[in-house]
Length: 239
Image 1 (cartoon, rainbow, N blue to C red):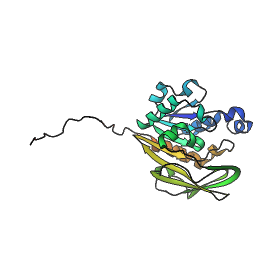
Image 2 (cartoon, rainbow, N blue to C red):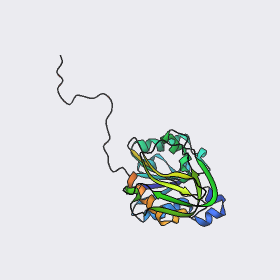
Image 3 (cartoon, one colour):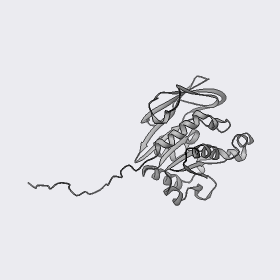
Image 4 (tube, rainbow, N blue to C red):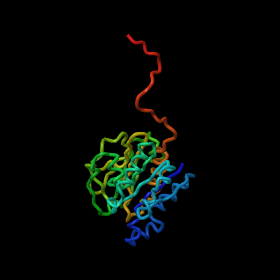
C-alpha cells in the first residue's frame, strides 16, 4: 500500500512545545508507526511545491492521511479539488483532528464541519460504540487519553455511514470522534484526537486505530462503473 501522510508542518516550526514533542514533525511520527505495518509511506507538507501533492504523487497514492490546523486557507483550491477527485476515484482518506476544517474534508462533506472546542488539559475517554468494526479491532471498551483538546457537539457533518467512537471530556461535552463515510469509490475515516501540544500520536491505542483506519479505507480494486449511453444486454423487441 502506498500511503502519503500530509501535514501542514507549521506548529512544529513555530512552537517549541510542539517541536519537542514531535521533533520529526507530526507527519514523521505518523509515518513511523504506519511503516511498522510494512506499508510504503511518504510525507508531504504545505510549503513544498504543490504542497507536495503533484499529479505524479496523487496518482500513485492508495491512502492519504491528512493533518492540518492553522493554515487551512493556504491550501490551494486546485490541489484541494485534485485530492477530492482522487477520493471520488477511489483513494482512501484518513482525516485527523483539526483536519475536519480542511478544504478537502469540507468539500467532501458539503457542510461547515464546525464544532465547539476548548484547550484545558482535559481527560478524554473515547468509547468504542461499534466493537465489531475492523477499525476498532484490538481495542478495549474505551481509549483513555490523559490530556487532550476538547471537541464538542454539535459537529456539523452529514450523518456518518458508521459511527465507531464517541468521546466524553472531563468538562462534560461529548463528540463523535470516529466516523466513516463513502464518497464515490472512496472510503473516508475521520478520527478526532491529535492536538499538536499533546503526545497523543504516541498513544498505542490511538496508533492502532489509525493503522486499522488506513487498512479500512484502502480500496482494493473495487469495480469502476461505466456511465453514459449503454448498449442493450439482450435483444430488444420493438412493438
